[in-house]
Amino acid sequence: MNNFLSTIYGFAQSNDFYSIVTFLCEKEMAGEIVLYAGTYSFETALERFGSYDNASFYIYTTQDKSGYCVYINRMSCGIREDNKIFKFSHRYLYNKNHLSNCFFGEKDCRSGEYFEKKDKKQIGFALLEILGEILITLIFFGIGALIVSAFGIELDSSSINDDSIILLGIVVTVAILVIVCALVQWFKKIIGDNRK
Figure 1 (cartoon, rainbow, N blue to C red):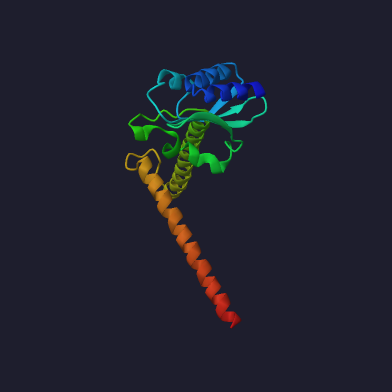
Figure 2 (tube, rainbow, N blue to C red):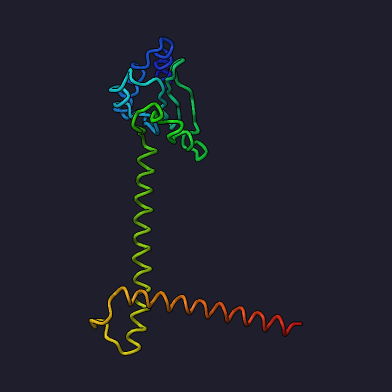
């Protein structure tokens, strides 16, 4: 790892950011480092080299999970150790205000493992939300179907549709909850009055 750092420090002293990104790209392809969050992917950074003045890349080594921030700005380029890249408190550094160059008229090109994980989490939450909606709909449909069948109406009747059954299930459930809450409050009031 010392060789990794000394190579980047050497390129940074001569302000050779292109060589730094090329070196990081090679290390990523070799599986020695992972781009956790970056202004660009390393490939995009090489393609767009010369068209940006600011960029940051938060990386970690696969061997010991040591974190680093590799950066370029109008003053210099370099690398600094940053072992907090996985911490929740560091998330603000990966938002558009800090990491993206979109405020310089570019499209948002942020890349890295952090954004891939975030997309997977959002997909997971969306799937859970859909499953929750289906489950709630089925519960209300079941309640509505029980009430309709209790009155002797056939479910396959043309005079009633699925939405009406679901709506009936919702109305009955809300009505039962309101009645139960009112009874609980009434009993609490009676018990409170009797204690006096």
